[in-house]
Amino acid sequence: MKPDMFRHPVTILVGLGFPAKVRDVMDAYRHLNEWPTSFRDSVHSGALKACKAALRGEIEAETARGLFAAFAAKHDLLAPETAALAASRTRRDRDPHVQ
Image (tube, rainbow, N blue to C red; front, side):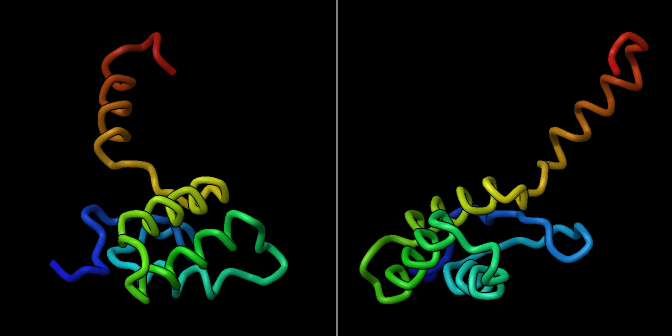
């Protein structure tokens, strides 16, 4: 595995809500760089700095991943896990009391 690859990708929602897997530091950096300037905040700045440091080999890719995931969570970009959605839908379909 390349040193800038994440052990597990971060799945975010892009565009009109389509899921995209962010698999490495460079991809996370690209998404952060494309984030509109007017919406950038301290969480964005921290994640961007971590990605730059990981690309230079100063920190582990997983550290940058954690900060990118925190950024994505804060801005409601994390895609829901499909297994959790399938499980909740199945339970709702079986139990008329669950809404």
